[in-house]
Length: 331
Ligand code: NAP
Image (cartoon, rainbow, N blue to C red; front, side, top):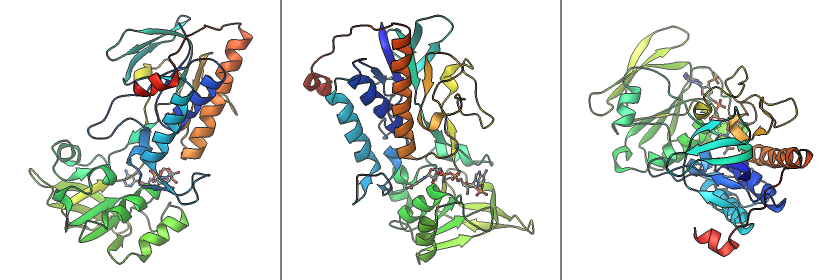
């Protein structure tokens, strides 16, 4: 029997784990499984430089930030299971958490911190070529350095910070980067947008929408439309990077928790409590507005404090003997 099960491995999950462990709740974290070559750790695992996380005046890479957060959690004896959670049964108490491979676990509380994943545009051939390694990707940091993309004209779609970041990253390898945005101004922060506009390797195509990806086994071109005039044309490109936002990872919950209008986990106003008492949410799975590493970490702290109070009010506390930190780190 567990006091707290935490699902996820981004800033929200590790911060919740640190707080819960220091409150003597001995949390169990399901950190998820690798996605291709990308290790668990959430979206920061595919982020290059993070310059806005306080405490790192020189900046820090996303993977290093996650490694450090996890190391801090392990220092307090947090137990980590390297598996995805397949399902949660929230109808009876304690809750049952069923991972992909190991035995189901029972817990008094659960913190859902499963984050969000990249969206696709939804045009013909996009996902087919993405799945077949045909030059379509939703992660420049994961794929951009591959020989396939070197010295080619690459397209990035989007107008937010992710699109800016991916565009700048790709300029290291590409002959030219075409940044396609459906409107005539960026949503991205001014500083990131200005870096893109100042880069001689980038050409911004405003008011441009992708209609179709062209190519049999590998991408050859994009059919694009002017969003003002409607005129269509072909753009020859050697790769497409889609950077248009994210979808929260809530599928495994089977509709047991209420969602907000944007499809993210609903929480009580000003709190991290979900629609089921004893289940808390933290990070991007519940945040369609701020979506920052530091806000995710803050909400992880809030979720852990709420779980602690929930357990204290009900007089629930399992004594869990955990291995010393050195052994936990080795695991
Ligand atoms: P975002 O801010 O939601 O931007 C998504 C962009 O994609 C928007 O420009 C949007 O266009 C466009 N878009 C959405 N659907 C589209 C479609 N179907 N076809 C074409 N374009 C489409 O998402 P994000 O860039 O992933 O950023 C998410 C959050 O993470 C933000 O808060 C951002 O600040 C943060 N972030 C920070 C950093 C950093 O600081 N290093 C890096 C990455 C992300 P419209 O503008 O027309 O809506």
